[in-house]
Length: 154
Ligand SMILES: [Zn+2]
Image 1 (spheres, protein in one colour):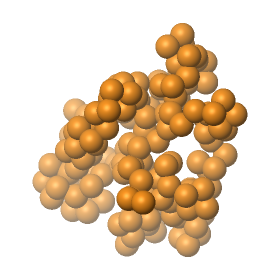
Image 2 (tube, helix red, strand yellow):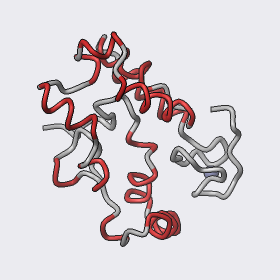
Image 3 (tube, protein in one colour):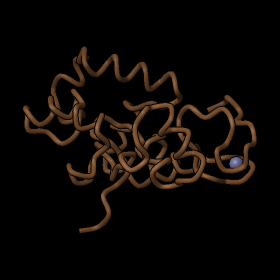
Image 4 (cartoon, protein in one colour):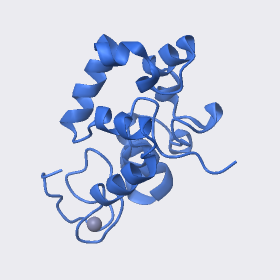
């Protein structure tokens, strides 16, 4: 099997998650994320939402959306009839993601029509430092690679 894509079942871009970035990038960023979360560095790891369950970040194992999809037998939220109608659980997640510059509905629309690769390419461009081209996570105000400030135009 190929490496699972770094997208979540609800449309989040896992590659820009601070847990995933801390796990992948290590160094001082891992130190700071570990301190902020109060979780030992060895436990800061994840293989993404579509990765194996045992590699999933501990908070994502408890994810309500994940449990809901499992119960209904869907892989992604767009498969669910509630999604179009407006799902309470989804709307709150959607608005909090939107605040950090992520449009998860837009993501799901891409997945639905088989444009996941195109969407991933866009996200890869979007979540990078304009100065050093390092990969960024959602809440960074300064790049954890080069220390440069990040423009809030995301
Ligand atoms: Zn940078």
